Image (spheres, helix red, strand yellow):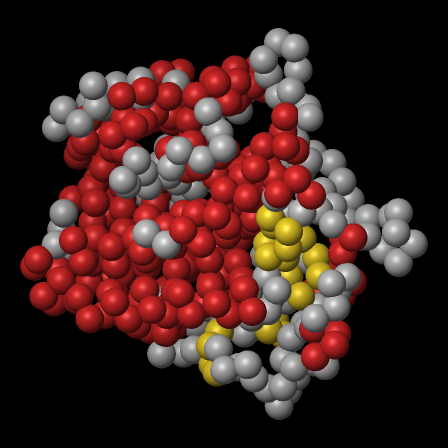
Length: 389
């Protein structure tokens, strides 16, 4: 899984910025991409996407593998449609979504999931030995499904063909939210924060819970997501808010980003840069061992820079939704990225130097290009159409 993760986290995914475009778009410093290069990128991306999708992860990925294996394609189909307006990418998104959904397993509490081995991707307290459902998998794969559903319902032609499916996808996404909410998938933290957590139980060989009701509800039998995973879950909540308009999703995202910012603010330096925040921190008593002092996981900066790509992605997404983070925060992150030589791709629209580095290093026919290339081409289309002032 580490190799798969290292591939995914270099993906140059940027926030979708739907209803909030008019607020943030004027703040972009994005320059026009060379037209010939744009066409070359599109051709290379499409050839690679069509070739790579033959792996059909939608037919086999389970548990957390859904997050890392399926999502780059689901994001790619979604952004591919936005970049080209070619409905074949909608067809592919629907095909992959249907193939995933038909494999869903009904679990003891009546909700459906896609259980697999090592559902939480951590060795803490033997959680990697469980067989069960993955909140992260649900969150990451249903974000593009939800966003594509929103596009379908906005288009008369797409609604005629796929409207019923889009509505069913949204209904299922809300049921998945309910599933994790009922299972205690989020925990309140001090100062009004919120973090997504994993539970200490899964499914046995007969499809029953591996722990009784008391253990499943024990407030100390949980483990907080590291920042990167909590950001992915929060971005799902933002997508749900975008498409359904329901405040509960906004609230979940806002409370997480409030907690994330508190972790960053403590480490801001006088020169306007940040020390890199910790990959994981204890968020409540459930993250400590029985002695109440020792944490269940190491606390510190992760040596792999890609995790911070995901964190900054979440921050920019929150900012473009008008939540928690400010333009000053983005400016400070740009200053930090320059100082640390980390040209975070989520900040490309706000930093010409990062844009130049992105265009220099992005390979549209790579794993990272599956979603990163079409997103960028979509933004370039907006720029060409005069959408950015």
